[in-house]
Structures are given as structure tokens and as C-alpha cells.
Length: 143
Image (cartoon, rainbow, N blue to C red):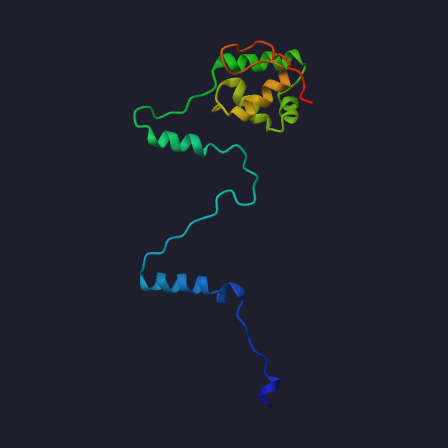
């Protein structure tokens, strides 16, 4: 048989990738190998609290996040019920998950100004500042 008739045998791509060979060789030699996993890859993670986490890391005396007050939770619940919306309806209206609304109403959520603003506009009541529970005055529209 001539050499042209022999076909070349190839290993699978995952076996011949240079990264995996180098990692395996280092492990065999007993060297330290650092691995990291992708976090939340392929998922749409919204409203991350990395800013608050960094602030919490800097603080030493108080080791907890501020939560939404029960007063704000009750105002959200009353405003939602006065409009005849369920938690799911309100969540759909502001493009959030129903669990987010449940957390805000029960006082378990860490306040996020974007979410609070969307809820304020949907129910028409103020949730931030000194006039919590008062109706929002609609100003003139910009031209």
C-alpha cells in the first residue's frame, strides 16, 4: 500500500486544544492551577448590586444592607390594589419578575432607584423622599 492511502487519525478537538494540555501537564507536575467559572453566562442578569456590595465591603461596623421599609411596602400594595392590579400584572407592566414586587411589598428587597421609579410611575404614588404615599404631580410635557 502506498502512503497516500493511509488517512490521518485526529484526536477530538477538546483533547488537542493547547489550553487543556497545558493545564493537565501542570496538574501532573503538581503545580498550582487556578480555575475560574463563568458567572451567570448566557443569562440576562439585571439590576446587580455590585455597587452596594463594594460599599458593604468598605464598611466595618454595620454588616447589613438597608432594606425597603414596611411603609413603602404597604404603599406599593395599596396603590397596586387601588389600580386593580395583581403582583404579576404590576411586574409585567414594569418589566420585572413577580418575585421582585413581592420582595418590595414584604420589605425584603434592597432598594433600587430604577425599580422604585418604575413602580412609582405605574401606581402613581411617591415611594421615595419625604412625601411617601402622596400622588405624583404630573408636570407639563416637554416639547
